[in-house]
Length: 311
Image (cartoon, rainbow, N blue to C red; front, top):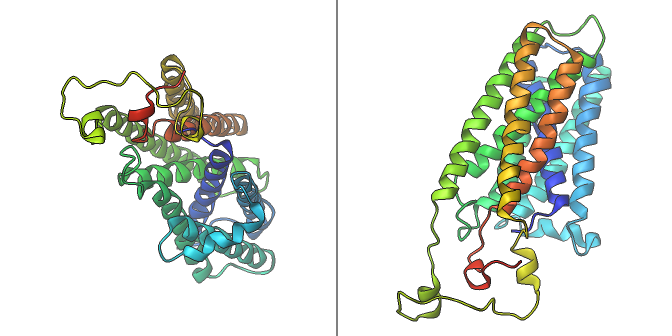
């Protein structure tokens, strides 16, 4: 598939915001850890900014942005429609939590609402791709797990960075512990990604030229792309990159998304540093953009059996 950069920006930014909100709600749900000043002046504004930027990025993927509201009308059957509803709900709950943090202590029910809405949006976003059964790379439960785990990991890294940037005496005294948790999350996400790549490498098309054409011949082969020039099919279902580019991009993903942030966060466990945490976050997000590009690019549409590879 040909990755759309607007969707890449949307899924990574909103996923990071969801991870940030989930982490804050999870930590503050049993007992208040973060101060109202930190939540109202740092955490919630950043989360709302990321959600807004992600929402704006999603409009660039639409042919008719003025009709975007109609996408919510098919919520009974479409995961995309459910995502269109879930995102504004999460933004509304976040804004209410922000108002509470400005005036008083956030209520328990509001933390619980943040946890639920963040999870629902992760599921809706990932299910858009998992429900496409004929794309085997996506049609697997690990799609939801990968979206959720990477969103939680990036949000946790962001939270660690925000705590470090918040120069105040009311900082939670758990920065080293939180850096250690970040290392664990990165390690889990790395192992999941390696397993997904191994699974995708072993996938075989359920259809072939013989079953598609009805010609029962084991020596059947195709020598034509089907068209003399490009078309919607050849533009939208191919990423048009070489095998060498894909191999190098996989190395970049492993290094930037997982390994380098793990090393930096490991140092931050014993010697917390704003520079280390910020660098880990920036490198991780760059790798996350590459990872999400690869997620779309490695999806092999069945029509590629007919069009083969377009140079």
